[in-house]
Amino acid sequence: MSNYITKLALSALSVAGAVALFAQAPQTQGSGNFPPPRQNYQIQTPTYLSDYFEEGKEMCVTPDSTGFIRRWTVLEPISKPNRSNTVFTDSYLDHVLDSVYFKDQFTVVPKNGDKVKVDGEKLQWHALDSKLDNYKLYRFAAALKKPVYGIIFYAVTVINCPEEIKDVRLSVGSNSASKWWLDGQEVLMLSGDRRMVADDAVSKRLTLKKGPNVLRCAVINGPGMSDFCARFVDESGNPINNFTVSYQ
Image (cartoon, rainbow, N blue to C red; front, side, top):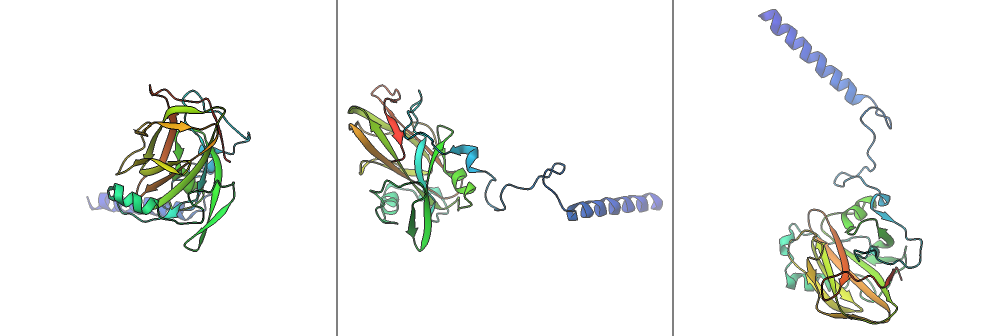
């Protein structure tokens, strides 16, 4: 029995030694099953912007049959720590999302690469089309190695209408809470701790005027994922797509 125990102990030591040596060995790109991570950033899921976004080459794009607006100019996240999304009451959102963080916050139609200063930090606007119906803000921030939790995103897009379109509704979903403005007027707010669900909330009846209409939103999130989706629908809930979308 003592010899059997001794053999087991020696075998365990050999395995431990082999594991230690393997852990110390340098891992090269593409070696075995251990390719290097895409990003050296602990709390973020590795990703590239090109995984979820692309730069729009055409000046204007038309929504597909689903009507979802995929073209947005998004500001790098503003830090706003919140330990839980349950704090996102209507009054809290009115205070936090209506607060002014940078110049011309509610009137600017930014260009790609424009920068603003928030609490001494320069943040950049990025004009990108989503490859999906929803705009994955978490992945956007992660790819840029920016904070992904306890943040506020501001996004802007331009809806170009060849003719006036009456009695439409803005239909959105967001994770977590969000607020929406059309041509400077607040039209919708989603409060509380919520997951992104398409058509989670709709606005009252709106009119899209002939020419450019500026749609902007703010999305706030504590822990967890963060994204949004938006489209315009008619009285029957059918998507509207007889307009074009541009960054400016």
